[in-house]
Amino acid sequence: MMNTLQELDVKNELALDYKDGVTNLYGHSLFQIAVDYEIKRSERYGKEFCLALIDADRFSFYNEKNGYAQGDLILKRIAEAIEISIRKADIVARYAGDQFVIIFTETNIADGLKISERTRKAIYEATDEKLTVSIGVVNYPNDGKSRPSLISKAHKTLSEAKIKGGNIVYYFDNKTISSKKNQSILSNVLVVDDNLINLKVFQAMLATEGYQIILADNGSDALHCVEKHSIDLILLDVMMPGIDGYEVCQRLKTNEKTRLIPIILITALDDAPSKIKGIEAGADDFITKPPNKVELLARVKSLIKFNNLNKNLADVKNILISIATAVEAKDSYTQGHVERVANFSVAIGKKFGLSDKEIEALWFAGILHDVGKIGIPDIVLNKNGKLNDNEWEIIKKHPTIGYKICLPLNNNLGLALEGILHHHERLDGSGYPDGIKGDLIPEIARIVAVVDLYDALVTDRPYRKGMDNEKALSIINDEAVSGKLDARVAKALFEVVSS
Image (cartoon, rainbow, N blue to C red):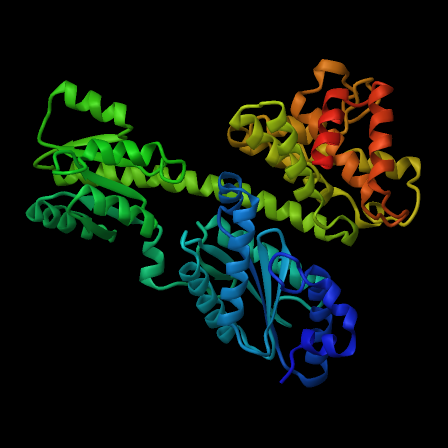
């Protein structure tokens, strides 16, 4: 039995042009066609179907830390895991960025949730990094009578999965489908001690609170467990043969991937020098042997709560990124725009020798700079022709709208907010929304402004074809010479594009 996209391949060889170069899956455009096709088939034969929107948890941070080439390899493995876990008649496509979408043909919600859970597990097992994903599932016709309404509900369902901590399959009526083992991924406690009796004591104390306990009797095994499992807290004995607790703590705290895992050092030594050494190694807290159960559980609970808060803040960032890609998906002409702006901006920032914090801000500003367009009516956003004065005033509101959307994450986005708000300002004061001039425009905003304009010039728009690279760079140069754009940023862009 052929699925919708296989039938399209037979009918139209041009369907191959819609395949994604990284994952070899069908892309956003073909997915839209497939949804319309399934709706018509459902109306004709009375068969329901399900749609699952999949988003990799905290993938943006993985991508930033390991590079986009490694990120592309992970996306390919995710795509392969999805294809293996679904049925032949089902349809999978890359939706945008690190998001994928599956259409479960002729499937009720119960079966759709089961296959989605199987897919979630397959992705987790297929990635060496044990990457987790969140999945929002919707059903036609129960959750939407049209393609836009169904996809909108899928985004809301996925966002709810993210808010609940990620690594789950979510449906608004049936809530979450997840086994105890899957739930425990969010509350794994690693206990490390070379004394078997001590391990059993800590295990008994913690088991009463429902934590998943992982045991290691030496430093080497502890480091291996952290690589293999998703750990939320470590109880770590100090005095061990071989790699002692101080060294294990120091290694984990100096590793970007593990530095945020809370570590409680357990020691029989209650002297100040030992605690100072533990603090220098990066320990978050101390417990003296023999432990007081009430004190131990209180400290464990507090640090796990703090760790989950960090995870949730990261997931809220991912929700904003999902919103940004959803806004971008409203216009087929701007597919990939925010990712290109982010990547080029980061490349320029590295040329300038900006700090890691500033580079991170550049990436987020690039991804989120147009998120405010969610508040702009489609009739204005996608107008096939020149905007009139009233429409132009509406468009000019999107930086402010985006800034307000992202403002609650001020402590996390930091400098990126300046790029979101001021990426349409110009050095001569002719930009918007505030008309600020020169050095009053933050450097991050000046970088995003140049890259944003360049990408807009070289891509197709409803009212014109994209320019060739030479002409676009010539316009950028003219804008810099006239005092509108930062000449230093423009020069760096020429070098990045030419490299």
